Image (cartoon, rainbow, N blue to C red):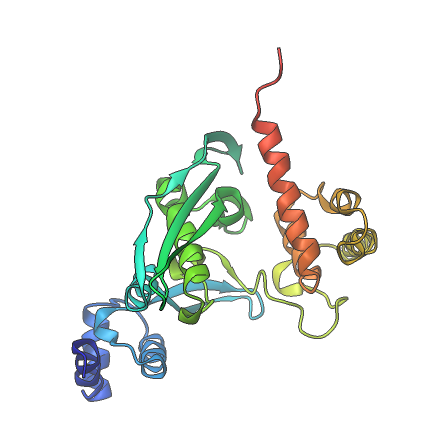
Length: 291
């Protein structure tokens, strides 16, 4: 029996009330007992030692219930540990894109345009292969939100623009290299974001996205029409992707962007094209004008 598994069995062998008291006073101070119980359930199901804090309790705004609730999510440390046990042969130092300075939601913000991380995996044959992930800061940062629905970065992303995007890029690279460790985003990626903001529409592509939007019905109709036209122009990748992108590229409001992104969830090829073209637009805007 491995040391990690033995430790897990020892900690989970404690009476639940004793384990709750230990976790609540040390690893998860201030967390509600119900949330710590979720941690225990997660660890039991995954065979993890809760005393090593493999997962985090992340307070998130639940757009469906319109209230904050705790969500248990893996930490980047858990992904690193699992990768190390499955043949990880190294992780590169994060490489950052050029600095960008702009006013976002009234806040003067400087951040790296992107971050790239490479993870190496040793296969059963002994061959080492590389998996690289490149994540853009603009597509990952968590907004401040609040009653004013501010799109400025929250405190953590404003304070650590490099560290936060580096964690996102590393987590994505680890998921690519080790798909068996899971596809769930880490707590580092989701802290401060809206729960269900990017969840698929379960039943109908015309379902209202009330949980993430306070958009007027008339504007919803306009957004649906634009998204439907984008789908028609794109034609599952066989049409005009630029024309499709132009149908939705002018939407700047945060709620409206989320609405369209949800609406197009079932059209993954189109969403990928939109992300790629949006990134190209940003790159072009950052190029100095010719003399």
